[in-house]
Amino acid sequence: MEQNNNNTKIILIIVAVLSVCLIIFLQLGNTGDGIVVENGNIIQVNYTGKLLDGTVFDTSDPDIANESGLYNPMRPYQPLEFVVGSGKVIEGFDTGVLGMKKGEKKTLTIPPEQAYGPDDPTMIRVLSLIDDIPATQPLQKEIALPIDQFNFTFDANHTEGDIVQLPESTINMTIVSMDENVSLSIIANVGDTFKSAQSPWEEEVIKVNSTHITVEHVVEVGDIIAFPGTPWNSTVTEVTDTNITIEHNPIPDETIQTPYGAMDIQFNETGIIMDTNPPLAGETLVFDIEIVSIIKPTSTEEPTNEIKNETEP
Image (cartoon, rainbow, N blue to C red; front, side):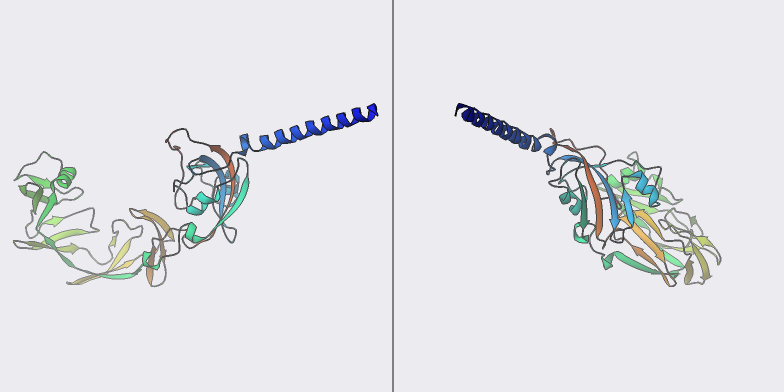
């Protein structure tokens, strides 16, 4: 009987030890690397972004970039680092990492509404391949600038009566008056010519009165010109007393950066399509991601190598 009691005690001790071990194991499983991504965390993520058809448009993996024909030796291939919830990445990516753990992998399927939005037709402009431009142009003889803008453009060491030259041009102007605004008058006589970085051709003064100067664009048939800010050039095909006809010369499809963001440019048989929608607008995006690290911030300082552009999350 005593032997049975001893056996029972041993069994109970073993069960108790196993129970304690199980509790400790479960507790350990919810600490340390069990930290999950929350808003405010600084995280690093390996990622590969694809379209629904599997086309890779961006990745942090140099091998995948090379396989996809995207490899750029000038960019670093490293985990994307950002503060979760800060709005530095697209919404679907920002919310998709919540609750993930270090080392966890996941595939995010992000609709346009949580990515770069739908295509907006109002952000698409179509230009004709052939343009008619007036051969002459009236210019206001006197202009006014706020004093701060004048000082930024010409510097502050000027007084009334001084002559200043418009930057990147051969246009000279007299300072008529100076107070909160600076009044400037263009110096021009019939026969004078102007050249400006903002014009594709030289201008000749053909008329001057008290309020306006009329200039004629100096150009001939066959001239190749380039309008500022455009990646293509244009050929002058006809010149009359009233109009100049130009034909824009096609270039391969291109994305250029403008002060308002990226612009896709495409030529077709009749015109130029200029699309300022983000390149991935209207697309459902698929991201294969892996959490590399999770840091709970101890200050308000943000990471220094956050990444976000038109082709990254």
